[in-house]
Length: 295
Image (tube, rainbow, N blue to C red; front, side):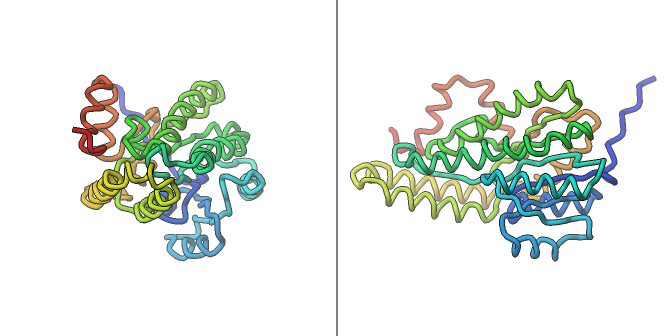
């Protein structure tokens, strides 16, 4: 007789913090987790974003909290607010979703923009994790770090973003091994291309970086970069993966009796993970020649 499969963990009575919940995937995730029974602290950077989010919430189980992941005082204040509200139970799970995307040829990316990318996506995620770990240890809870398909394969013109995602993947592996003795699990959720407002911001920021580079350097990349931006936007718009797919995957990672170390969301994210494992770098490089204009 087969052993019965362990049941998913019930959301009721468990508190989850979601960073970057003002819009896009973070917003969808916070709303759906609250809808499914978790108590959610939704991290936003502006009070007005929190009020809009609260108005859309399915119940009083969602509570906006001000968190700027690049501001250590803001992070500490959010952790203290959550601790004061949850009492002895504390926060049970943390979803490190906050992030930004710098897209431009690496030769044109100013060092301060790379620092901003890493400070938000990597250093900020670690700062939030450190602030909430005392509560997560107490509850023997879970951490979900949101990466992307670019944590497996680095695309041309997304090198700064991929650097942050590769770093987040490595940080997650180390955290998972370090926190296992305390009963805290760490999973990575890797969404592929999904149509969200981020793509407008990516285009605007990329053009700004290219326009600020020396013209003789920018001219080398302008045509291929414009082609890349168009291709990327079309890929996101035609993607059948939706924000609710991402939210559903995070829910699975939070309720699985034995959470996996990695969850891919979308066929492109799954393909990137497989290709990174199976193909040599030279073959992957040939696949990107059409993007960079190499013949």
